[in-house]
Length: 420
Image 1: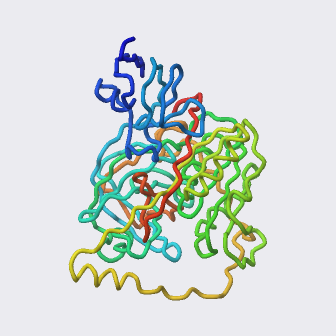
Image 2: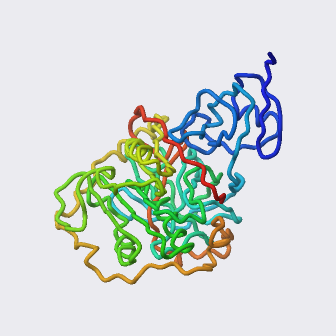
Image 3: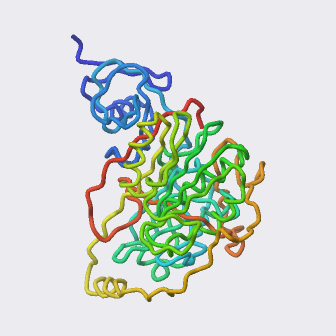
């Protein structure tokens, strides 16, 4: 019996040794499969095995595997989706403001156009700092793309990058962008009900997906579940209030810790407020690995389609030298207590209806990828729109945390019939 196996990807056929990693075999033979973490967590290299068998790299969706982990044990036919090519661009920070306690809005102007699909993420490396992964989002008025990238970042004490926002990292700071990565992006042409679940700043890719889905079909049923640990962190309420006016959109805001004096806001975790799922539903989940893992079980039981983007966190690096330790101690000072006065219920407002118009100049096409039209000489930070929330990554180390923790592995997405 031959020790080699035949693999076909994108019409290209090549041979690899039995037991070789699928991604390594493809790259060695000049067949490009996008990848990032190579740890089976980010989902960028997920592919569909149409014929044949692999071991390792399995996902929650039958037939889908992480190419960076799957080993070839038989002849294979592999299907991939068309996604924008991974590219690198220089950029600069043109806007920075606080949206909520420990949540910052960043506006970034790239020097050239970069294309991505709603829900994907990029690595952002500010000069002098390590790279972190965040997902671009739409502004509160539904605009996505254009000349300014909107991010929302959770600031963590001790975080090498996030604790520098507003201090060492200020408007004008240069950075490098690389991407896009990720598999939890909107597939165009879908007709099934969309269930979009985002915890914390995981709402950012969810809002990017929702804004483009509304452009594509204003009548498609959409359920958005936006969660936060505490009420002040539920910073996406302005856009939720607008979405609640649309007849085809149902909004479920949730807060894990009470007390909550808002009749429109539910208490508990996102998974406790999921609707009854059917096989025709398409579910996107972005946020904590715990939430993503919990939803994966519900989706798998219903036989629905699932795309997930868990936010795993990068551990902080030990500060170097006395100055670094002093800065860290200053950054760890307890924040000022928020006002105890309960805010008004945002869902009692009669906000203007949010219906993004088709043919927006911020889109390459209604069903195509989003494009950043980068030109820092023409960027106007004053014209930047209020942005909705972000994602994190990179192993997929999304953002930062003060401690390392064992995170559950990322549930997989299912390959849709229509390609982006």
